[in-house]
Amino acid sequence: MKTNPFSPQFGIAPTIFIGREVVLAEIQQAAKNKLSPWRNVLISAPRGYGKTALLSDLRGKFKANFVSLTMSKAFVNNLKDLLTDTARVSELGFNSGFLNGKIQFKEKQSLLSILKEALNKRDLTVFMIDEIQGCFDVLAEFAIAYQQLVQDGYNVMLLMAGLPAPIEKIMSQPNTTFLYRSKRVRLAPLNEKAVATAVTKMFKDTQKEISVEQAETFAKNTQGYTYLVQLFGYNLWQATAKKVSDKLFYQVFDETIASLPGTTFSILLKDLSPSEYEILEAMSQFEIAEAQDLVEVTKKSKQTVYNYTEKLIGTGLVERVERGKTKINIPFLRDYLNEASLQSLEQDLFE
Image (cartoon, rainbow, N blue to C red; front, side, top):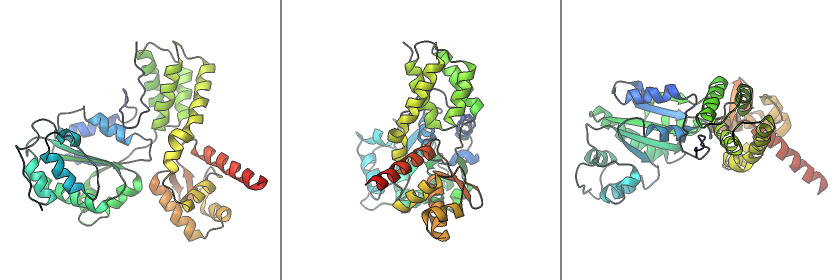
């Protein structure tokens, strides 16, 4: 029995990476070349564009010790605990033979000293930091230690991923200016032709058939949104016995879109402040919103609208089309917000 080739699960790499081949190839090549600008990579994108899946996929692409780090105030102590407890070393991602023998850390020891004591200088170590959101002082401390490792000849790489605003914030921290020389990758919507080609291949390779026209419609309707490509693909593949019919295609697509509020939009919107949500909801009334439109709808000052719009751009939910003009960046989110706004208005009218 063939396995579904699509992967809508968080952080799990799909069988085929659509439209990210260049990024993957460049990072793989950088593993062999210490002079490559791709040795340090900052990946930014809204949620659902495949940042975590991209990092997960890299683990199997080349030989290295991959270290997945989570930033917290107790980062240094947690790192010590993990490195001194052999039963828990694997939790951090250290491979066998990674540590330089048994380590006994001092009570107060710098992060740089800890890393130097633990790392094998010659073997490649790739530090991965995903979903950067806070603890920027701790992250800055790590970045400084990492920079020193590079200067001292350690064979290390750094891959960081996060929403646009946190990525910008870490670069503005004291002593992290070297990150400006890192390779910055903003994951864009997937190319329609690449999606159609990949979908056709994934169905064919698993002995199922989707027509050229259906694959092209698939690519157009999912609008390059990585998560939606994987979710719709997964649902359509599951529902298809052998050949996709037009009736089944549109039925599954409608069901997939109907599931987005619970699977996606609630996560995208949960961290917004009431004022940010209000501006986003106002923006949903326009395909392209001008600043004055938002001022009139929300009755807020132009400066207030500008401030919250900038914050929304930092989340990746909104993009600037041109000066003073913005639009919602996530497919079908605008429709959802319009519907939610209408339901709220109807409740207010009938209460």
